[in-house]
Length: 403
Image (cartoon, rainbow, N blue to C red; front, top):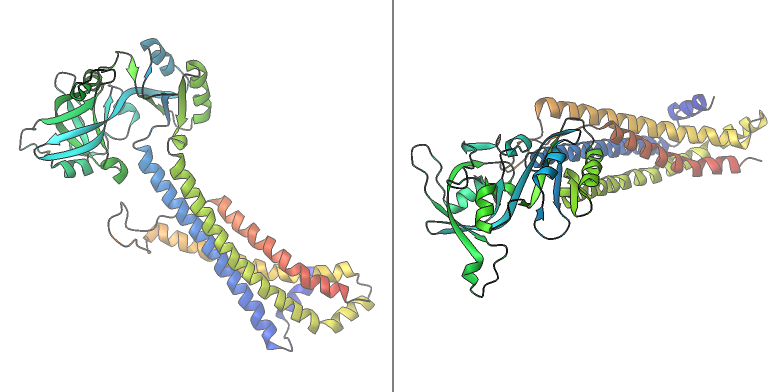
């Protein structure tokens, strides 16, 4: 009954044309706001998925780091026990330190990372080595794979047509206590075998070599490491495996998930996403004021109808529900139209990449979108909640005017 009355009031010709205009403008604003909300959230989801895929090529599912300091002791038995934890694909130990590369007249600061033979099974760096090959050599004949930004900054030539040239690597020694500062650093020679390209943050910072070279240059103990990187089986719960490893190793070690390794990045992305959502929600709030105006004018126009309904035995609550239903109908038409339009735009963007990114320096040249059902439901619920609040005040006035 309420729906039938409300629908007739929406379609009925009003004495004041302004009521119709305000009502449909309100519906259009709701459609615009909900469409923008779904589109913006979908674009943020697309960029978040893109960034996660890039970071997952460098960061692993889990990472063991020292609770304090830069290094920790991990015996071969402990490493073997870690690899036997259910859900693991492989675990790779490494040593990482800031180093200075000297090549010809160029000096470049890098994060030098020494890896073991299991590294290729846990990391996406070998797959993203586009120049030369992924080869880290050994302690006697060390090689390194550098980020493409470092290769450019240091002027390193990687080509099969030319023999590799020696590059000086300067690293700090761990336990040197002499008064001569030069005794606290080591210098070794290394050659570049390849260059990887993943993301600018890594490409401009990292060089990867073998763990034996790093241990020798830094004078570390045979079972001393900076971290252990772990790859998990697909669909394995990182938190569950993290808890198992943490229990195995104790409190002297810290186990991080991929999210915890990049918590500031992911938190910033989430905050930006919901900040934009909140701003667009304000558009719905503005539309709600227009709805209050339209329904208030409609209540004034329908005074005679309200009196007739009252004489027929309608209660205040029933009259209130009629006008609340009309507001909900207007909001539902607007929100439904906006969401359907957003779904259509997302579909066309995924299929045809219609909206391009400007600049040309990105990995992709179009806006990535990823629809999430929860976001669509959230937008719909937000619109309904605001419309209900907006419709309640005029409906309350309509019922309060009954005697």
